[in-house]
Image (cartoon, rainbow, N blue to C red; front, side):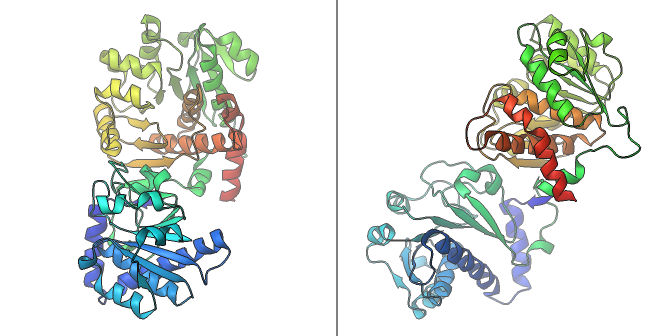
Length: 479
């Protein structure tokens, strides 16, 4: 599990490390790592390193110093390096001197330099900066045609919430030092590929502010049957979804629970015949009162927001087992808060809203600070809250937050949320801790979308069909 730290914690850790490190040593480590990545990008995009043309966009802070020192290293490899000094009086003196000693130069015509560049290194602003690029930097954006390598973050993008309030850089790759920051997962489109350079910061960091699961984490955690398992020990998932009007929601949620390796899936609702015809292994009944015992419930997709849906939700919450509440269930909770009285205190609950459903639950949209918003929702409902988005956030009531970055926008299609809820329900039924269950389900959901799409738009059924392959790949990594 990878850690992500806010700029406040990064700055504190850097101060402690700087106090125990010879002056200039950290910048040397960082800039050398930056130069290595710059050479790699040059080789990828031009087929060569020597004789490549690199332009440095240099601001007043240490990020500008990193860029200048990296430029001096690149000059020693035969790269032509030109610096555009956006604030010449405050340029990093030692870095600029090093660049000049190595044969680098300062641009007399920034526009022409950028138009002829093979690679641009963005060292305009660092982690302490907020707000859009200043005018003299923003004026250069139309001339950026070469790949951009950002130092720590793309300039103009907020480091802690990933928002873009105005003019900003879009990077091909971002090199970050010591630890990853929230911007790298909250706005991956602007950051491009993120590469972490170790500068020895790890022991100073403490507990991360956010976490991100990797493939091995999910592969290890995903339940698979052992020699002593049976259909009951694998977990019995109950699905209360769909209606005569929306039977597809029932088919999608139920099917994803089946494919997620649940030992047994029970469906309860008006779409029983449709579900049974598509998934004959499912035990299907017409009502939650006749469903039999389950170890977790999924409730909400397609159940409607009238009295019948409200009764179903109340019954499920009163069962005393973990519940994943999605779609109409979240709307019912927002409209009739007393329905939550049926839940025994401490019974695990996972809410999976998109932005609109979140606004109904909380009375306000997530806003720019999605991390704080999802933490607040988790505390309010004493539940794990999975806030859907291109970066899905999963918050636990104790403040822990997972971030899952999508592999494209393939999940922006009707029914994909129903597939996710079935995955969450299956993992809850297996006994997995709710915060991890929601995060692992989001990871597999995203991977299945990528596998199902194969580069073109994919339906929710296509996403569902790719679930076994997604799990197989993750499990093979664990081996």
